[in-house]
Image 1 (cartoon, rainbow, N blue to C red):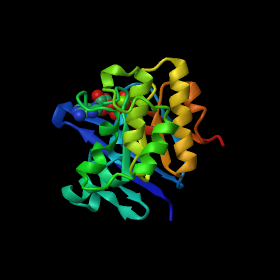
Image 2: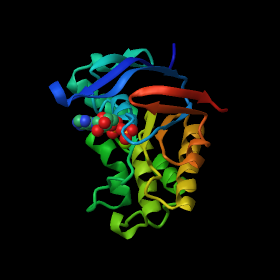
Image 3: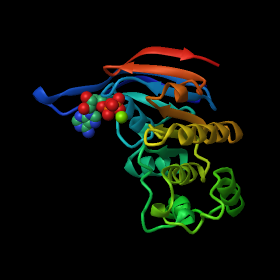
Image 4: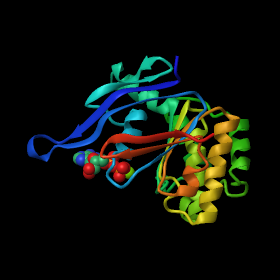
Length: 226
Ligand SMILES: Nc1ncnc2c1ncn2[C@@H]1O[C@H](COP(=O)(O)OP(=O)(O)O)[C@@H](O)[C@H]1O
Ligand SMILES: [Mg+2]
């Protein structure tokens, strides 16, 4: 059984004359622990695909199986639980809560889910992310690179099966971008997390195990590079 299996996925936004086909019959599979980079011009459907894989949006047609389970066969409640427990999402602009410090931002999703924070994992993650001595800082007291490291910590603290990044380095200079990709790769290797990252940056894509190119909602290239 494949870890992730995407079958004939289509997504159409709007209706009548305003229809946009954001995804057009997309199919692929991924083994557990693979690092996939998704590239393609603006409007090619990258974010739409990522949002569907994360259970944030539903497809118009097609299926997504994670470890054999049809994720969209679930009702809204089950899907919300799937998102909280199995998916870690990282965005370009971090989306941290401005009034919460580093620790509280990182632990919020686990607490909202009624879970208990694994304190030793939290502290080892803080060290891995280079956020020691920043635990009590608010987001506006951190650099962009540090904020993105908090967002990564938040996304992976509860050990999700799949980590999804929508241009996570898009707002960072090249040094910070390299560090963020190195951290994502480290988590990918150490925790066996399957990682999918959308990027415009060729140096980021070349860090992946596989590069997929989207164009007009279709996969036009899909290469395993390591
Ligand atoms: N919520 C939405 N409503 C209507 N059209 C959308 C919506 N989200 C995305 N689209 C359209 O779908 C297409 C793919 O968008 P998107 O997945 O964001 O592309 P990318 O991330 O590759 O830039 C674009 O034409 C975009 O305008
Ligand atoms: Mg996008």
